[in-house]
Image (cartoon, rainbow, N blue to C red; front, side, top):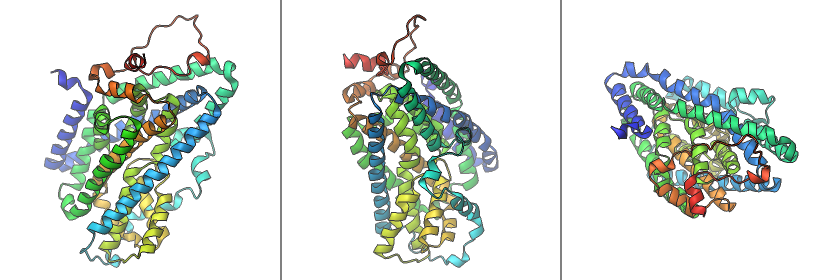
Length: 451
């Protein structure tokens, strides 16, 4: 059947099979974990190289270095506003619905050893912004897969290419072709996405079980509903301002959403998101700057998670928080919610760091949510991904570099028409200058709409 050829259908089948295996054969489901882990590692081994190629070439093609600074400022401003909204929404919902009320848990009875390694990771976190973003070694940053540090080097490299202009033309074309080759490798790896989603979801259901949902059901329900409303209302409004509808956007990225749902990490789809945003008409440089930065500074789902779980632990342990103490918690969260890597477990480390700094809510209370963190992480990762896609469109529109009408026609086109354009054969004697390649057309549909 033709429908089975679509990746999103294959991933759906993998997810359904994983849930069934995890439920009916939990021990076998737990053993499927290497499938999901291997798929994620295959993608992660390419992420830093894809970011380097995209950002450095994109910046080299920008009209001026002032544009780089302007885009960076707008990006960080948008991130701070939206993540603060997410934090406040999570705080408000937890205060209204009180998901932890009535549990009456004595903090002394909690097993603090269960989250000892999260405490160690929180203490090992960089102590300043400069420690977070400036690497000791460029090679080390690439080897560790540190997105922010690789992004900094890529920006500097792109600026150097721009300054060198004509002398860097051949190098820039080589980097661009290398990036295209990496994306072809990504396409090959993505054929394993159904298998990766199957292994990851089978492990989750097999290890934690469906019954885990009943123990902390109100917290899970509140978090899911709040995240869905945040996406529909806040991110929906931002997408409309950028000129596209939220539903067509989600439909366009449905394969990536399903993969994130199965693997519980947004890193598994980063290269694909960059490619598909460029295909929509977002300039390569803006995609390269906004999207990787958002993986550390625009974690909307994690922001909602942090405020809701913090108050849940306070309510469950009967720890009263005054208004000023909640404002102080919010101020701490505005810092600790930044700098995460967008992978499973990063939010727990941020939560541990927050409660350790706040010093009012018992840190040992984190053990209350360890069993359902993986369940919460599904929608947390989805919200993070959607938030960063919308952020890229908003910044591109804010810069006047995004044709919303052409993008709407592209999103409304049949799926076959949205496929990547086949590269055109080019004469070896043709060597266009930078001015000829500064603003390439992302897709034939966009070129047609532009005319």
